[in-house]
Length: 290
Length: 263
Ligand SMILES: Nc1ncnc2c1ncn2[C@@H]1O[C@H](COP(=O)(O)OP(=O)(O)OP(=O)(O)O)[C@@H](O)[C@H]1O
Ligand SMILES: [Mg+2]
Image (cartoon, rainbow over all chains, first blue to last red; front, side, top):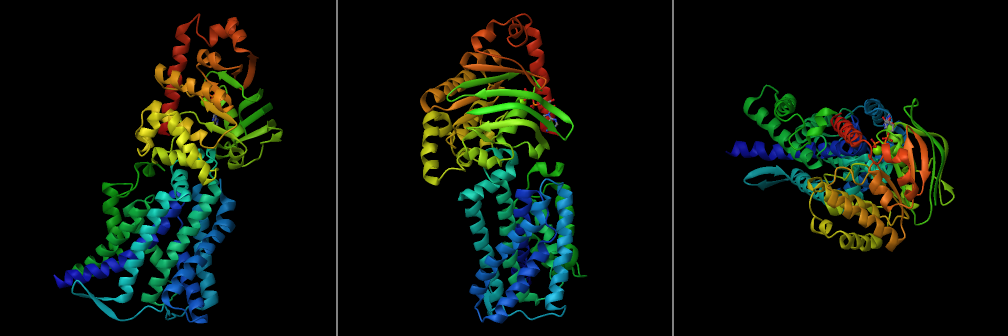
């Protein structure tokens, strides 16, 4: 039982990070129909940016988190404006290709600026453990779960009640009608990219504090992808939950079966889910036709 | 206030949907734009609203002016801000959003305080919409949806309201109600109305002036009373001599629409 609980808590701790990255994917996909294959790279770029800030000024964790998320919003807006906006009106496929190119470019830039060696990340998070349900957890893991829940709540309030949030859902629902209502659809797209980068930045800071900064940390973006597929590409909260499911499955697979199954467990879950519900657990049926 | 002059509109650079269309809507007029399937009516409305580009459509020549300013090349949100709003064909509600969220989006260009007032006005106008305010719009009946669509358009305080086949697929009683609302709107709020219809008889009853389109051209325009007398109009649009034709055209239309939904 204790073993199971330990696997569960650490599974959730990993899962919330996948969940954040999943939300980041879903926010963009839902409003623009584009899968951003540079999501992991955006996360990496913001994590390195956080490192630059943390090594310049001695800031605490919360200051770092908030300042980096704000910077990340501008990174997202910048990417949208420079790389994505000129592609508007092109086929979705071409835009997806641009995100792949962007991914490669960001990896190169990160290595150019910060070299390829691992860098310990001064996150300012406490390194000690606490006991949760009788299982030892790092405080940083507890923090990541709390921040994840806060993020989900903020996104829910934003999408449910704010004018821009409702406009995002309206645009995702019927783009031409959104135009007819006077919604500036281009701005909605830009905001989606900004928000998505913001969410990935939060994930990036936690991932960096667990794994150190490395130029291959973008790989977490790929590992989080099953979360979005499981939850449904167009469901922000489905993706969040999907992340936790993937985190748990990975951990149970590793803990009870072994053989490095962790690395592929997520993709096996995708296969099973897609066989039962081709549009993900929380996605809408239309997706399958696209 | 709205003036379209020799508009030629093309989709995908080759499909000429509108060849040569000119018409005018004056202050606080109700103008009907009539014509059968594929005449190009919706295309004209899309051009006015600036939403041709998602369908690869383009105004190739001619002019569209509103209060003396050209609308060509204006962004859709600017056009709404200038006072033109459209109730699109088939209502096009945000079917995943609630009724109230739909209305709020209609007021997207307005300041929050105005949105609140307009919301109350819409609820006063359509009590059935008020009752359904927190329902998901996609689950409403056709008539209720059309009321939401009209209410949503009114949220932007338009000077010119364009309605694309508001009677489509509705029971006669509901159509009556919608048309009554349109007439009242002009009377009470001084809104000009451009009414696109296939239901010519109904549209001619309420309008001050009417244009008839065929194959991308305006082929006739006159006061409704005169058009109602015209033999061709009687035959082709009011179905006096051959009721069967009209019925067939309706069927064709439904078939076409269903196909569009599936693709
Ligand atoms: N997106 C599009 N791409 C290519 N051709 C189009 C497109 N939309 C409309 N057309 C064509 O343009 C012509 C005019 O279409 P439009 O929808 O404006 O007609 P309409 O008068 O509104 O007809 P209806 O009464 O059936 O709604 C038709 O021949 C139609 O096939
Ligand atoms: Mg039409």
